[in-house]
Image (cartoon, rainbow, N blue to C red; front, side, top):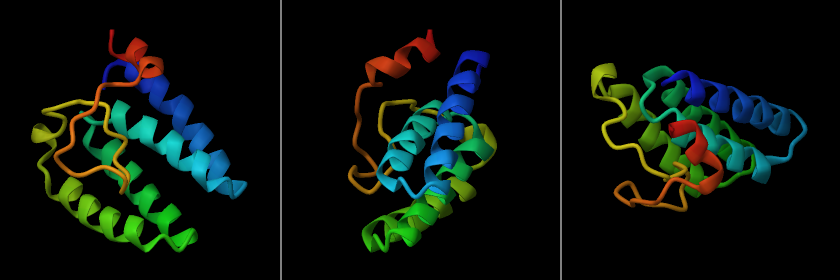
Length: 114
């Protein structure tokens, strides 16, 4: 993760944790989705986002999200760090998108990849 991505990640991560603390779970998932996009090529940060998405799924009794994040957390953990981030795209990593879906990076995040 470059410095721009790290600053964006830190911004959205702080917002996500604040929203989780205040039980604003939909906004927390949006912020975690931004973190997911920004951390695609950072092994530990990427894994941490999937685990937080799992936590939000548990807190909201969203069992589709829990199932999805259990699988994705396992895959993220099992991926060797040097293989992480081979295909950065705009997929937020939640259960609304399939594993192989390709999305454009959202406009508000593109600045972090320049």
